[in-house]
Length: 173
Image 1 (cartoon, one colour):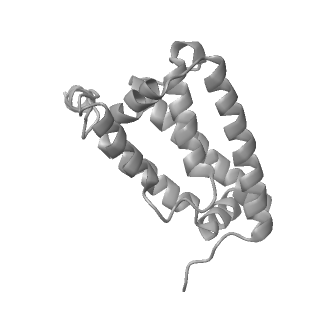
Image 2 (spheres, rainbow, N blue to C red):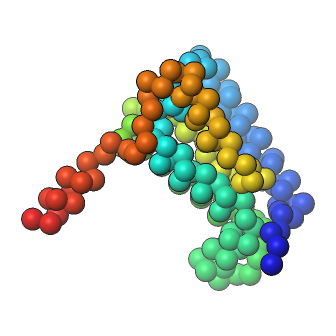
């Protein structure tokens, strides 16, 4: 079985939504005077493991059949274009929360606790997951490598520095 691309109507809907969301995000960035240097630092601060996870999300998000299967399991209907777009928005939202967690070490419902640059970067990455036809290339990986070079490698992290080993030890007691 070959890979199927998005249907024209679904592609147009995703493109229109992604363009509108990107416009809102760019407006937010302009209102908060976010600099390229701040975005570079935020991207370079992402652990490489999260970059790989986001690339995987993007590959899954661009496969129409996966959306239709997820939608039919969750809702019980067959092959809905709007449902597939809804599932892709959910993947993008999940990706945004993963990026926020990776950059800050916490998820909070108070958006004012995040710096504008971190929120902006998380939004750009979630749009990367949502936008149609981005799953064929590892654009975020290239962006991460470029940001790491631009920042002189001072933020490079391979695995997240969260207290998972300590949590596992505490649970085993």
